[in-house]
Length: 344
Ligand SMILES: Nc1ncnc2c1ncn2[C@@H]1O[C@H](COP(=O)(O)OP(=O)(O)OP(=O)(O)O)[C@@H](O)[C@H]1O
Ligand SMILES: [Mg+2]
View 1 (cartoon, protein in one colour):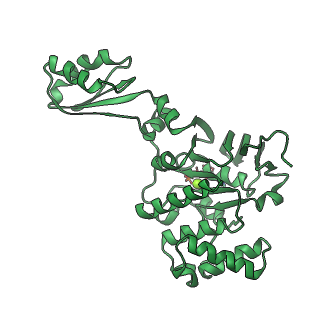
View 2 (cartoon, rainbow, N blue to C red):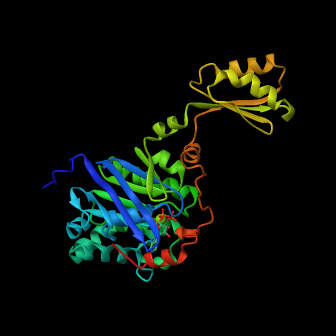
């Protein structure tokens, strides 16, 4: 029976969720809604509060204030019932290294109360789905990072949950494995699964998500589709590479009438924001040529999510490029170590 405050179309709802760890305000009142059958990407830099929110929504942590529900079940009051309705694949994979792939999946099935035979059958099905049939009989300790991620995701799907939480599912994966995992996620969503994923990768949010929530310092600072967020940064950008940096000031004067915002000059490039891309290249070249400014190159581009992040937070998304195999590279190493011991 759905709770009255939860719409049938809403799979995940959070209102005013607060979480502190001593001095650290990890979540400062998060409001969030995820429509059934869609993907929401929770996008934010290291320490923004992404994992904390996922752990609250998956009943691993209780909020200090606020409420949250998933498929109509309250994450605190109905925690036990909720656990069988959700899957979690994490930054901190809950895989037993000593067991084989098949044994890992069978064990999860047994935890959900399935018979041994049925759990094994489901395990085999998932190994096939995630291209792990060959490796299924080997200890997980011999798996590559990408295979481990796939096994972790398979484990999250054992109980066929309608809602899936993926905490940085592709961190540490090579580009090919990333795309493979994206395709897997897309096919799950096509079958009706609701997904909340966290990511530091703007292109990942762009590719997978119907809606994006940008989180920074424990608060959602922007929410919308990728296009809506890009629109907030305002229009298209015309970028002109000048033949010589000496022409910077002249180019700035020449392009100023094209926009309400002042052109930005940096070394030998000038960028100006325009409402529409129609005819802007021709106009920019004409204005520059009239001013006697030599143009080496010119292009128009939509703002990227990087631009969005920069304009919303005043700092670039701090993607940690050297985090191997999903092990976190930030300063909160001790904290992260604690979290790895917990399983759903
Ligand atoms: N168990 C804990 N004890 C103390 N502080 C914690 C704990 N868990 C998280 N924190 C702190 O709360 C803040 C949010 O952490 P969280 O792990 O949610 O961030 P995140 O967005 O997942 O970051 P990352 O991108 O590095 O995974 C950080 O400052 C972190 O150090
Ligand atoms: Mg995290």
